[in-house]
Length: 517
Image (cartoon, rainbow, N blue to C red; front, side):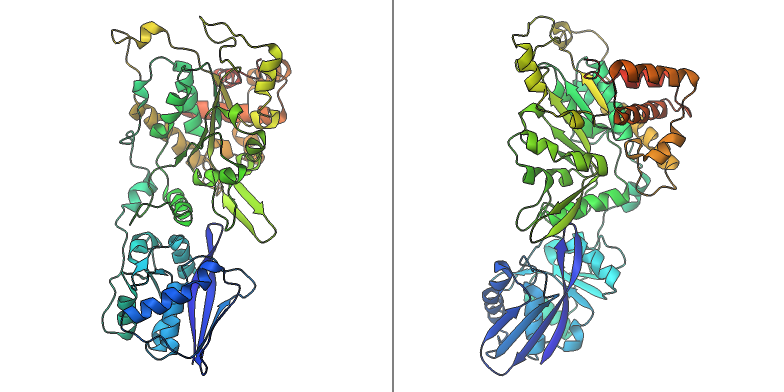
């Protein structure tokens, strides 16, 4: 008897349909075709043990399983459940009509219990788009899959419950995600995010705080340059606390990525905070942008719609840093290998930090003198290529904080907390969302295309003269010209100004510290 079922496989963060054909006939051998990998081939033993442990019959006949399309390699353990159900349906133990129009996904344990698998949200979105009437997944994946609103999702603890549901003996409970989605979509949360480090803990560093506020408001890349102990990492770690809440679409994108990577918390639903990723400087280019066998998302994709922080950037291998040039510019990563080609989203804010020289004290420390030879300083800074450096919208000097301000007896005004800063950032982002409402995919100023730049960032006569002077003196590239305009537009948004003023432009030029030499 021949039975057809539906399942799903992953290509990047998207899922595509897998049609599973199971034929049980005369003979006594098992066959599995359709380019299965080792994890899929090993499912025979898992399925046989699970079916027998539940008191069901594993047919001692010829069983042929075909995974279509046959020209694409099938990877992972998520096909255990659909293949088991297919064997039971083809052998008459489950009604064939009950499996039609249902998409199955799940890994089997030897005792028949179902274990979670990655990518269930992508599979749920595929099931909804393909017109499937229901989706059956492991219970641990049910809340995640239920984020695909408009689809009937059932979570099952074991194969016995799935079989009883298909036979009509019991009904699997329908899963619903309980997260308050409208609050995310409306961006109602105005306060700082609980549990995150607060900017009020940072003494001094007024210029660096202002630069990070501008970066958060416009989604700009920012490089912090300063001596050891000046507070570069401390400042960067507090950036997530002032970022605006994600929109519903952004939260779904982030959740899909973490689901594919197998990094969702157990039983977790929607990820309602923006990611902050800080890989170590020893990471490889594959770990940073993704790939491998089987392919998986890298740190750049895990930082999608959030922050990718590279501490001590010159310590990263140059080849690793150079792979960031495409995602920083395009917001995506295209990986092509001999056996596959995938594309991952990677629209992140790049935040970097570095010392001005190998010893760390060149031109920036009031008390310690630099001991580095000029050639050593040049080699050190040369570890970050000019094209990558040019992609930082803001380049900020971070100077040491005076000892008097660090003292517990300091009587100066307290630093502004993240709640206040975040309120201004959200207000600026709302202006940008309204401005780019007719341009899907453009969510903030940093992603503004050139056609919009000429319309949105118009300068008056004095502003044009100032920018032309800065271009000549700093010898900026065309990319630097565009990024100064984008940063100026963000500063104007923070001031609720409809037009870019000269003071906004002047402040944006001041954040090109490395261009100033």
